[in-house]
Image (cartoon, rainbow, N blue to C red; front, side):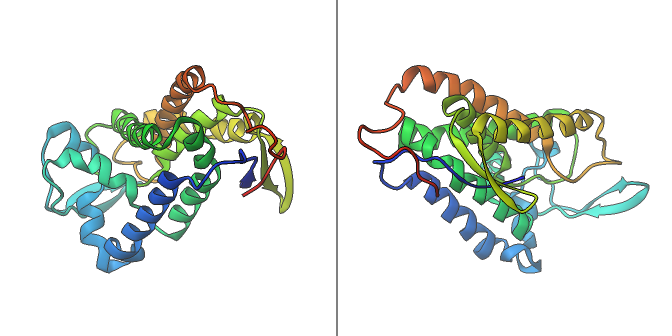
Length: 253
């Protein structure tokens, strides 16, 4: 199931903050991470969030060896920012590859604008960053001693999805299902996505250094829960009309 569009509110200008986040993620990936290639490895390993670094307040700078599926693996470590907890923010704008960044930014493009338009640019900026930090802490909580770097905008974007679900549950989302487009309510599209994260996240509680790596499902869950809570707050505070008067019923983009 792949979302390709949603029902937008008419009468609004560009979603400047969402667009800025998209641009910043692309710039970091291309210019600082070398598009995921070897030239960007020093930056990627130095500025990703490493749970052990956050919980112990230290910056690992030498490669560490762990065992994954019975095989010894060297985990590179590089100097990061000072203070090291700044990686909670820097990692939020980094990605592990083209599919990773492409999927994340597609979701942000589709779902970010409605939330931003409803609550305003500055509150949305703060909400996005806070949701991302909460998501990182949720992942760290699973294995606070892990030395495996984590990175990606998924946690913050999961927060956006949680807020969207609460604020726009009946919005029609266009998805590709088995290569065929179809329209479903947001509560179905995002609800199925959330169910998948929670099901896979259950196994995260058993993750150790021997089975580590892969998708940070707990970050997705933490960001999503933070977004749902924020969504109820936003819905109570921001009571603008669902659509400006005289606007067409729907638009997709």
